[in-house]
Amino acid sequence: MMGSLFEALAEGFRLLFSFDREVYTLVGTSFRIATSSTIIASCIAFPLGTWFGLADFRGRKVVDVVLNTMLFFPTVVVGHLVYMFLTHDGPLGEYRLLFTRTAIVIGQVILATPIILTMVSNSVRQADPRIIKTALYLGAGKFRAYMALLGEVRALVLLSLLAAFGRVISEIGVSMMLGGNISGRTRTITTGIALLTSQGEFTRATSLGIVLLIIVFGVNLVVYQATHRAAR
Amino acid sequence: MKAFEARDIRRSYNGRIVLDIPELSVEQGTCVALVGPNGSGKTTLLEILALLGRPDRGEVLINEKAVDFGRPETHRRKISFVAQEPYFFSGSLLRNMNFALAGDRLNGSDRTQRVGKYLSMLGILEFSNRSPRTFSSGEGKRAAIARTLCRESELIILDEPFTHIDGSSAAILEEVIGNLPDDRTVIFSTHELARAYRLADRIITLQDGRIFPWTLENMFRMTAYKVEDGFELRTGSGASIYYPGDLSDRCSYVVSLNPSEVFVSKDRIVSSVRNSYSGVITKIESSGKRTVHVSVECRKDFSVRAALTERSVRELGCNVGDTVWVHFKSTAMHVH
Image (cartoon, each protein chain N blue to C red):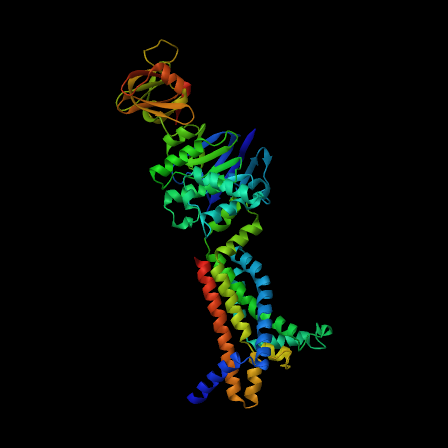
């Protein structure tokens, strides 16, 4: 067993550095989809999270619980719900999005948004209350003041992006149900691993898993450096 | 023209009224000191005037224009404020200065020049590339004031600029505030009356959220005794002041004298002024506003401060240790 694991590890590195076209297609697809989902989710979650972190309204605790629950949404449930909307007789069926990268991005945005939103709102809530006031009395408008606030908690904001990216690049439920695992188009690393496993190609499946881990490790390393620089 | 006006301002916290100002106005180009003990409502009032806080009721006018607290941005941009405990954005002091200047549309060289001017003025030019978070308390205050002044706003509000700072920083700040251009309206809070007199054209005293009609000096606890045509107020050591108003016999009162309404002479003078006392000059303090404060000890518990012009002091030839006479009319007294 250990022997096959080491074999897979070696194969993983070999695949990554031998510039295997199929592997790089999977990596590229996964990376593009996960990056798009994280960017779109952050566009939704940054303003909402900032507002939610600063606002004081009734029912806030309920929203907190709902958001925390959304962090644990099973990916297949999200995949299933979005599938119902995108299927040909669903409300958005006419747009023919099912089994496209866009469909995966929609599902992944639903997964990533609560992560970024919760982390941003918590970091804004815990930030020094003088930040916004200082920005305002130095002549900033509200938008610039909020940007200054996000700038001051940028280490945590970067971490929220990392957490969201990690969640979407490693999920399989949404990619499989909404992407359909179409070779060269919607096949991602995780759906590729699932396919190889079902075909009995365990070593190749494990090595793809290792490729995924290496990528996530690399992204973590970059973000770690960035957050440390940001915290200074 | 009035730079700041507050009308019928009230603010409460947890059901307790912390600020209740029926009327307050500050003329353009004046330097006003807001004096009062901790918890007297100075910060709350300054934040409302800086449009950073909202009163529960009442109206604020900036340059004689009423402020809509729903959209205070336009008025707020005209005001520069320094908080008692200023916050610095991460990064260098230069980055903080640039943040303050971001809305000014200055070109690169003008901006560098402006930043350099205020950093030099506050004596922190060599710290420009350091993070202000590493500064000492005094350096931090100077940095915060440089950051605010570089905006060159006409209206400047400084909340306790002299607290928690060393002597040299305080001296620099006094010089900077005292030498601001005449068109700047400055309001600063402090609990040091001497400093307020040195810097300000006018002193507003705040106590329990209300403006006191007198300053917290020349205050004496006295007992009223009925005399033929009014009352005689006496201190424990026997110093007595004549007061023609209505008081209760043998009751204790706090009496305050406005230093600007106390006169000093070298010799006893015969006049209509009923309250004249001789005493020894114990202190002569010069302020940056051509006013000199002369403290005259008439009795152990009755030392009177008089605010005189530099010229008067020069002409009188006042020196510490000289015996002089102080005189004041009963209208200069506030009895509480």
